[in-house]
Image (tube, rainbow, N blue to C red; front, side, top):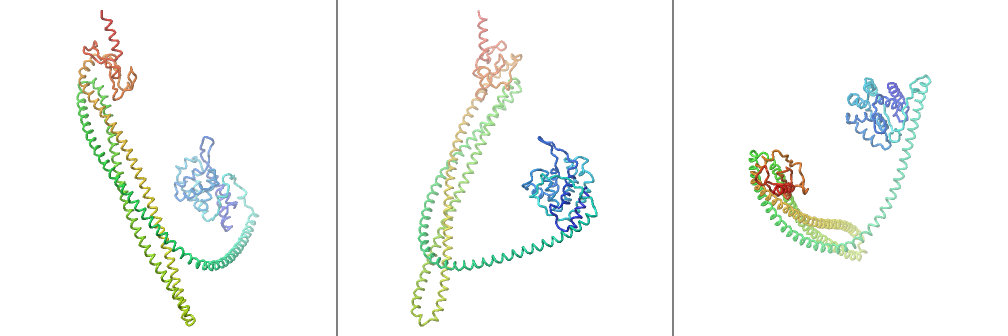
Length: 590
């Protein structure tokens, strides 16, 4: 059926002799047959609600394999009326036929059988050699010119049924085809004549409209000449008003410039004071870093001494190793805090540099504004001189007119020449007035730009004030960090004192370990809270083993010492064991 539909479409298109529309029956049947060919052997894809079996999936692969097909895919997705993937696939086939590249696109699909195996079964037509044969027949469709309108058609709800009656040929059908060809030729001629008539009518109407527009333009030009003469008189009046306005504007700009200069000087003084304070803070931070590095070296030396003691005392070092790890964590935390302090100082230094650059830029802008004001004053003076000259010329012309009127009776020929000269002078004066108008407009634009620059400078001053507030907040944070650092230094000092005490108690621990070999010691990782007071352990609240029961308590709950049967010297004992041992001793006494 694919072979018959392709051959029939080519033969009918060549006999028809013009571009094919979407209503052409053989073309519709061709799309139905191609849809059935592409649907043959499609795999069913399951979803939550229904089963999906469409040909839009394999056609989307063409964009990846053939880059020129991206335009078709994008145009199909942008069509507003398409809602189903089957409708998009039908639109894609129509656009590919209009581009005369359907055979090239489908050939790319057939070559990549590994990708097609995701969509088709192994016995599908596109997976076998018959698919290559159909693609070869599609090359002949490049002869056909098709003009299809995809936007208006309802491609989602069309029913694809093959009409077999079109492929059953009779002698009567052949005669009817010849008649249809003749009728089509006559209709084409009729359409051509009608289009020519329409074009001629349109040209006649356009000429009429042009004639009307020219008449209207002539009347408008006459009116504009009269208006121009009235405007000359108005411009002279506006000239006097603009002079007074320019004087007022110059006074205001000078006052504003003086105010801005005073503000900038005050800001520079405040910036210098703040910079001195920041330098002092930076020097103090460097001194603190040196002190902390010395303290860290001392702590590391003490840790090296403890490591050498580990080989001699195995059980005692298990307890001390955990304390050392906790100290290392605190040191790491202190290092991180120091790095954060460094980063804050660097950020503050960068902000200082940026503020210095901003002040330099502001100074440059102020210098530019001063230069512009000087230029504006010079230009205003030149304009005033020109206006005075023009007024003098007008006065002289008026005097000469009076003289020429008295002598008009005797010298009519000479008057005509002088009148022509005066007209030329008037034209020159009009041109001078136009030039002065343009100068005034440029001056007004420059003044507006200066106003904008002043507003920009005010905004920058507000930003500098906000930066000052941020700087004060950062100073507060730095003070808080100093307090935390001081507290941590105190904790380290306490740890150093406790480490010295632990060295003295190592001998006691050796003797206690001999007696406690039979007891079960609780691991430090398992104990997070004190057994008696149930408070959480921390750097200040440290862990201690009871030498009698082997469980872990805080310092407050295990600050008792008693001699045990295993060790004659007094050893650390929890409060509960201390009470029990005292009761036993009192019961044993006579």
